[in-house]
Length: 228
Image (cartoon, rainbow, N blue to C red):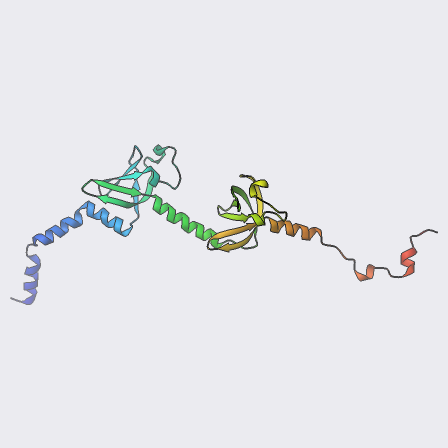
């Protein structure tokens, strides 16, 4: 018998029990979702039901639970608004014995938000004058949310040329302010209101000096408008 025929017969021989068990393991949906969790696979799903404390979505024929806190980055007032909504999730907990499959969209949303923030920060120009709104006051300064969604700190020493003991003495949450971007380090934006005051003062102090040819230096120029 040729070597080729021997290989063909060997290939057609019945598989061993171990081989069959391996195929069963591969087909077991619990093993599939466990693999999804280990690899951090992003899965598109549809919200098929709303239950107490969260939502239901199917993955590989298994009923997955998405806690309300894992559906969004912010509080959801009405979970029913998510019914039949298409979202992306990751598997975060698998327990076949307890028939437990937990999914989350939050990690994906956080990663996406972080990437978008990095892109916006990359476009920040030091020296730019921008508008924003005071979002919180601390003893050491005021946090201002800029129009592009980023936040920066106006240190108490950068609020005014006048001595400011506490930001709350001159600012309120919700105040609209104009600030200058004076620094950017490790993703943190430093702002100044004081720098704009200095710019205004410099403009006001500018003196126009007449050209030399317009300055009279003889006695006739000095006394021509004087009547005797």
